[in-house]
Length: 574
Image (cartoon, rainbow, N blue to C red):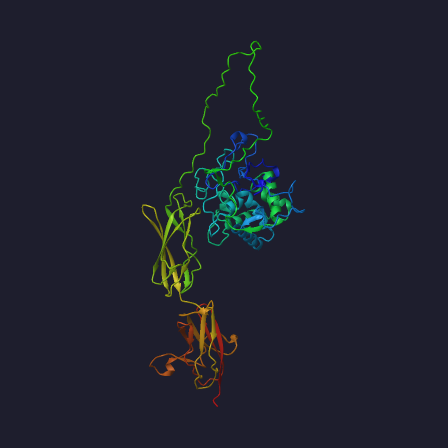
């Protein structure tokens, strides 16, 4: 990769008054580490929070971020005249899953907030600066980072001082907050702006789809139109109150707008990747403005000894001693282990229900909470199905164990309703406690349904009064194009050919005969219920007529709303 892409980190510059006015808390860092924080500047190099006469640090804590710029024109380079990125160049490559997340976030926001007009290239620019596109696209199949991307500890040492707001649920730190994920949200901001970008029912800052949609939603806040330069700049400064940060993001934004292409996930080097024997590539130490650089000593020139009588002593001068520090330098305490979960909360919005043979629309979900009612991460929840409906989890199991993520949510796999209607229970049990906590989630398998009903016979539906229609009416019910067995259907004879004549069963005209030994007059009915066979077929009983002539309707409707209406004509006897 070009020398311009050497890894380096830089503190955010001091915030401007315009940026401060536009600011809202979003992220706390940009140059995150896979396992810990980046080296912070010393306390002497940064203003302390709330110091007299100084502005409080931004909510980003002026944390480090990637300051590498895209390739620019320069001596010895063969760039095109318009500085358009070369097709297929490494610099313009974006990992496939990450690029997909940026584009889907743009499409989602175009539908939900068309005024904002957030371009995916802007999300890509911020993602590049904040995490190097999720460490070069190191993601699992769901778009989640295998390990959390964490910014530095915001303990006031070189950064903002933000006390813990999430109990360590997102960042694993119960003392101070840290920025989390590919787009680097601090926990308190994620609570407000977190989104579910991949439709799995979670809001996970470590998932690129969720994080990209959340970042786009934040950029669109305050009714912004990102095609307006002032709105665009204020939105970017919401990540870091630094004009240097703004310029860096705008450089990448402009670069991606001129051309970008997809590369395989994980094919690019991760920012700050370990080198040598496990150390990280060193970053230049930040230098305060106005501090002169030390002049190098010329090698090979020995120091001239002092002459006697020139006012110097022939005795060697002892080196100055450094007094012991009066207090140890501040240290960052290691993150503490969050408290364990003590209870479960049902996240469902009602009873679980699905027709027999179909997938439940809602997945059983609970949230594990600690004693202080904050989410408990890494808790194990076992889901168990009970009942006689034949329902299983997707894959055929009736028992599964799920580990909660940072939001404390455990969501079971999709439920597949069995073939027998009836009640069921999903038991959610919190494991790893002295007395396991169990929560019962009620569910139901309803009668199977059909979404289409068609007539399959060619029987003439005209009959003389006092006679029987020739043949029997046959229909077939399907669901999603497949045969729908066991579906209940109601056949009703209605008066008149016009729907305005009503939908209640007629009191004269064609009729069916129910089974039994009673006289035929006692077994007449103009409404009956039937069930489709194993192939979804429905064969109606014979239709008879009384002495009433005219036009009637036969309405057949299945569970699920599939309907067929046939016209019956009864004529005078020949």
